[in-house]
Length: 460
View 1 (cartoon, helix red, strand yellow):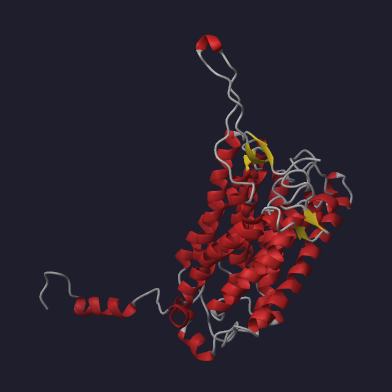
View 2 (cartoon, rainbow, N blue to C red):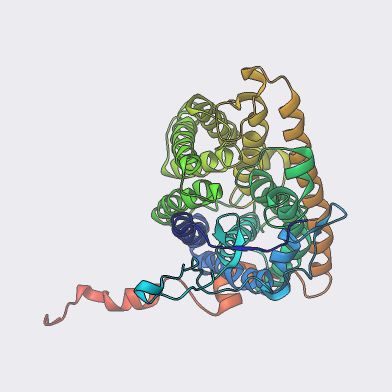
């Protein structure tokens, strides 16, 4: 039986790349905050940003206490990792490693034993802990876009703590924990089902998209929706956020190679190709449907492409990446309109982009996976039959169902304890003022300062 954590000397090149990747993934959460913040009305922008930023605090504390252990400890009944195995990251904190020194009496060099530290693969265990933490943070933050303008901040914080514990940590175990790497036994989707989800199409996007849908339904519609116009108040914020997400996503996808080798390079390329194709597909869909291609559409298309290529970036070639990007860009552009037909108020299109994009990217692995890629599986179009397709479908369906049930239970618990929804007056005033006693834009001082067009040194 292997001993976990394994002890040894890490690869310095892999370690450097993964430290950078972890930082890139963390940057995605402030990027998401700007992306979402620009899409809401001016009276709720700070609250929208705070919901993303607060996830960085809540999830981090829970992750180092028991979250990492729930996700990457030894499997318990195909449900979750052993929560006590790495509680408080016990056994994982270590200093620098060093190779053994061979004695050379002639040179006055004495023998020194090797200094080994806890490893995950070729990495210091702490680097892997940090990298996976960033995934947990942004998954929670993604949900917030579905409930903009109407959720209590305190209720959101409690829901965040409950949801990441009950839903995300176990699902991350199913998808990301491989036998013999982080622990002796890992999760069932990764090891028994053998579905391909390289960087979180199921664990992150289908999971968060489903949670956003369920939470939005339980909260109810924003007052005035859909009759009252609720346009984005700051499209440059949205474009900035999309750019930061694209930049950070290289840590998300190429970082999931957990090494600085060829797999990181190929996932970097397929991520870029699919994202570019999705943006163009979304813009073309807008042009044909509405007559105009918009900046909001470009930003949304970028995110749709990033979402769809996340599970598949290691299993497709460039042609497959183009197919995934085009299909995701077009379908997500059409899917964002479903909320008007079906009557659920998904404020910032988390369902249309993340749930639909995650499903598209996960299922298309079963069609366009190329055997020469890092994943080494063949989809239907490459002679593999439907074997991989059914595996992808089962993985996606299991996560969707578990997330829906778990989210509904947790949301109702919060609703009937501390409360979830802002009252009518606070919602009308805006979440910035009612929840945080702040405003993003001090229009009064701007107006006073510019009254009569006065400038320093000019008498009026």
